[in-house]
Image (cartoon, rainbow, N blue to C red; front, side, top):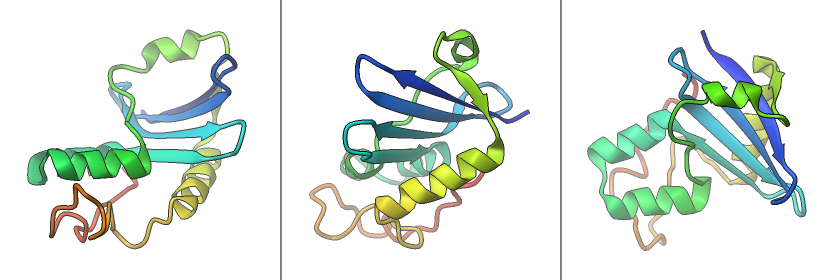
Length: 130
């Protein structure tokens, strides 16, 4: 069963929002810096697509634009002192807002100006919703 949580890292001034899949792994991960509201928004499906069809340059380009997806099980996060469960609708609104802020156009992971750009990978259509 999919579930969603948010947590504040006060020391870093960073909000983290996670969508966990049936196995408790991060399917999507949004981070927002409290100081300036700058987001990241990484998706497991996109990361796996780049791993299987891209190269290290394409992955580096993706991570510079969308951030790094949390790795490992999120089960322990449910017990984290600052973690709070959130609704799927709340996560979807936050995800859409973060992706708009990052300039996500239909299916693009990076652009031709990116040093790690791999032709064909950036134009691949990703399905961001699990």
